[in-house]
Image (tube, rainbow, N blue to C red; front, side, top):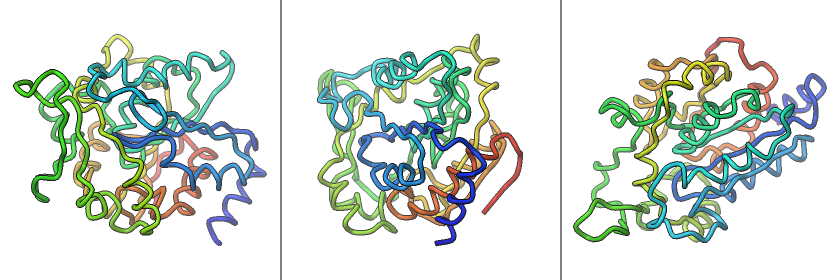
Length: 277
């Protein structure tokens, strides 16, 4: 209830029609945000949930999506279609951090705030071994967890990956309600890993991306993007504010009220450096 009260108090301080654009991680879709969208729309905010290529209701085959530009085109098209004087708050989860970073490079004037939720936050994408170490999940401790697709042939590197159903609850949603992990098991799709690991952004646009305020929401019980990886990315490219949630990798399921409270607070007070638990 405290989070609900916070949201109600903040409504009077900022425009009710602030527009949040929610971007999912690999294998997910706009459906991941159903709790967050419902809560935020009830608070009076405008919310859009984007399905990236081969995700959600987009029926493209992940094994045919081989470049990051192709994968992220739905978000780029969405941003292009916004009015020149409209600003949105971009929220990226997990690999969705790469998507909102590219948008920040391309459309800085249209973004009021970029929010990284347990997300890959690399200014120029995957350019170095350090980028890969910090930004790519390492699930090797759990064993053989991935089902791979080989769209370019069995002798080539995999083009898609999906966490096997028997591991999804343990790794992705250990603190989430069983109803939500069951829903996710029905809706998760292979993600285009070749496209994602090819994400690289041009240094010519680096000055523009710095104009977009950023906040990071750490997930302290995360088994996917581990806290130490999140810390490394925060240290390398410091955001204005860091929030902490004692949740798994999927706070939109495991702590929706708390996540909404942070999103509303961050949108109201973006740009003020702090660290909040």
